[in-house]
Image 1 (cartoon, rainbow over the protein chains, first blue to last red):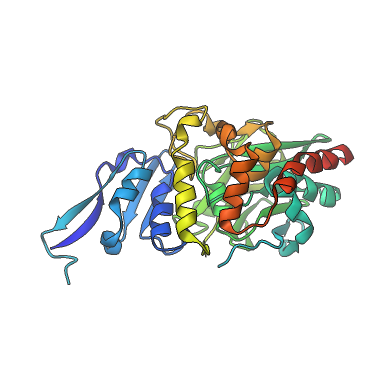
Image 2 (cartoon, rainbow over the protein chains, first blue to last red):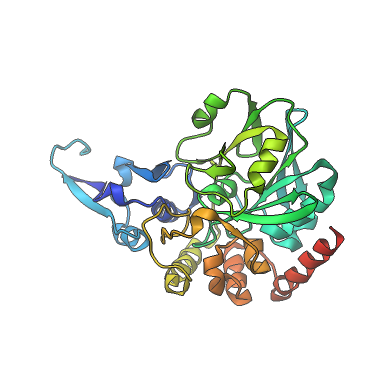
Length: 83
Length: 281
């Protein structure tokens, strides 16, 4: 079964974008372009959009930078992202 | 793309002629960025009533370096104010070090800045559809303040007064570039070391929206800053992280990791360089 990166409490995201910077560092770059995690702002609320291919990321480091330690892997029992 | 170590890249927006131009300034490198670059640009373009948004070399690259410097005239007095939110990240990834707004628009206009280009939109209803989702910051005049991303603002309402004078209803800034760092391992280690010093900040964890690059979500950054440490404001670091970014050794290390060749002496001279410009203004 494939692993899918998810956010445990999306409503707790404070929009700091540290997760975006962390995944980009893991991919060898600094910036927003092509990030597997994107944060969309709407005033005090944020939505976290995650690319299914983000399953290869180092989630330990991701949770170290996230003030809410908000990320986890879920097994993709439906096989939606299995290949 | 690679970090430009040789010059400061500035996007000039001419409001009267609805045009823009990008210029490169090697002479601004000694000013580091932020308020230093902002004041020097103000001196150069004072006749055109400039409003200068500027960042420093660590914005977007290191934690707690999350503010944007704004230099502008306030009834004959040059002011420097600072706004939080996501704007400094967007500027950092737009590839420009500063945006300078010159002159006055003939009719109300919203500026749509994407990387180093600008377009002019004359329908205020369009503002939230401009820019690229997830990579933009939106500044809008609301009441007597300019509000960033519907939350952050500046400590004085002089930016709003200037936007009204210049006929600017808003500005959307999108940064879509990514940078490569020669020594990514060393950079990541330095980044984590700085992030681990969050206990040294003079604010605690809160439940407000955070500025980009800061996990704290403090309730104080909503209303920006005015005044403070010159080195810290040249970076443009958060004032609440002054204990970290007013330390020349830490700043030197961060710059060195990214590949800048500033010397300790260069950093130590910045306050006097900025003061010389201030005396001439």
